[in-house]
Image 1 (cartoon, helix red, strand yellow):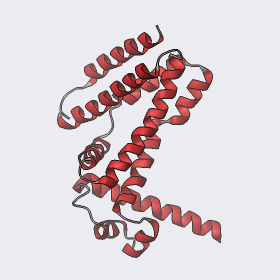
Image 2 (tube, rainbow, N blue to C red):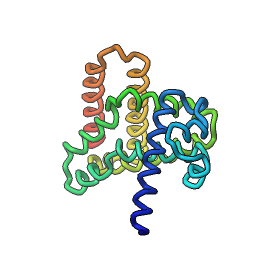
Image 3 (cartoon, one colour):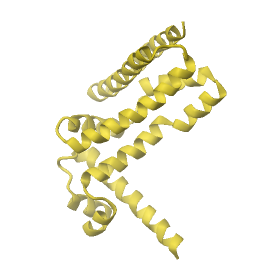
Image 4 (cartoon, rainbow, N blue to C red):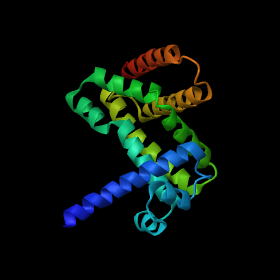
Length: 198
């Protein structure tokens, strides 16, 4: 009985997050209220508040799920454990040049716009950035263990800046073919990462 209730609760939560995510992508964070989320999900507002303290808590849960899927920390961990430098470099390249679907890009751009306006969203972003940096640090340390912390930090800044730039460019100019830029950035990062080990 308890297990069945937990399964239903998890399914309701997933459905709520999917409904909210769709609304955030279509309307933005500002234009989406709890009543709209309740209406779209078919879940009563009171039940939503039992699961989530506020709209920002819903945003945080969505960001956490998206970040987990994007980071593929288990893939990186396995590559680091195996000393598979090609897989580690491939992971870095994917982080920097990945082409997310349009709805993911819209949500990321919405999050970026909110960081400066909403302290709760800024905290969510700082936590996501810290988690990304932990993974990047592990990747770079594995590839170039004797590199200084400062050089690794600069490389992380470059990778993160390129990643956000690629997302923004794809969102601003969706009609463009970004494959040449992705290839160029991939080769640039390959050279820069190799230079760290020298």
